[in-house]
Image 1: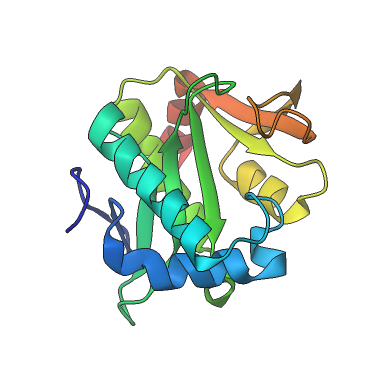
Image 2: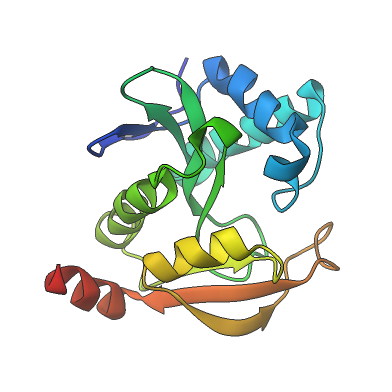
Length: 182
């Protein structure tokens, strides 16, 4: 079963709603100290299942959630990326978390472009943010490649309210102007 929602494609990736079959890859990512450091920390398989179920629930309740990223060439789950706005979140976010096997391939930017286009064009969002830990240089680079800038310090709701984050983002008009330049 796949959560209700659209499937998007890029040159190398399929972006689709969360499915139970994604649990192995999701749990591997969350069990990796480096991969999970800035997206909730180390988690066992049962806690990873709850995270995956929460994302599927977002699709069912809100009509959007992060997409599962499937590598076309291998069929493997390689991460999650997309619109995310839990209760009391600091804005309309397109966030990401990639499995280490997907690092260094440009997948976050490739999928991020598709997810941001979808958030603006389909969801009608007027702004998009990315909540990034100040120490997460790699995510900062992704945000910059997507055209976002650091808008300053932010705060997430409990239980993450004490974690330092910077809000990166841009408006729909800024995104469209950048995309028009090609």
